[in-house]
Length: 273
Image (cartoon, rainbow, N blue to C red; front, side, top):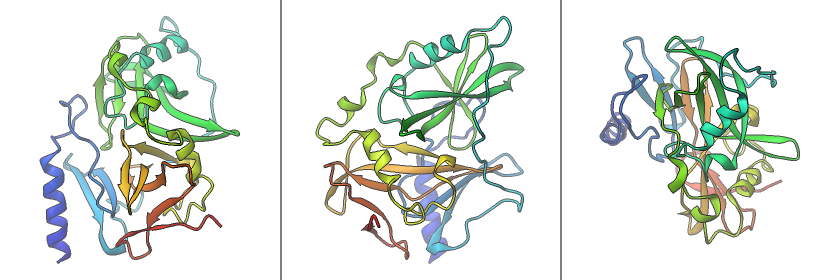
């Protein structure tokens, strides 16, 4: 039975996915909400594999050395000699569409963390993460991005760890957070920090909250008859990406949060205490 369910899940995923490469054509990178943990990794043959953790079994790891990538402390990043400034890199990034970044708004609405300078395609790139901040607490959102130090290329990192091209000057049709959720009583930023008030173990998160990146749908969804923001925690490991079970935050400002229950069969309201 488990194999049959897994086959059906993978069939659904493959219908909406194309092969991933460093510069592949656009594809749907995020698997659907299946109410089970999903690990995404590239195997030894270069194939992208989606592993569904059914019935609470131990999540698949391709090797015993697959370790969680913990966020490091901020480091001072200095512009590359002859390259664009950090301010220019941010300006170029803000001009890009947020398409498939899974952000609850425009790129310009989020703060930027310059992580490092990396090599890609024999060029130097600024590695950038997007985040929200409240009371000195950061919650990272969307997907990481790299901007070439010469200002000519921008890529987003998809869920399979491949870089996908982004185009500057395409943000004009993006909707702001208030336009995306016109009927919500709280903003998506407030919804994000609502989950931070809960015990992360109850949310199914075993690592420090700062190690997760949160993806959000661009519309309000209904869960257990409650209109909610859908927030999916994403955790990067050395050789895979884990998409955790989504968490739902009531959009009415009541502070209600729904998470998958222990048997992973349904969602239930959490007790904040």
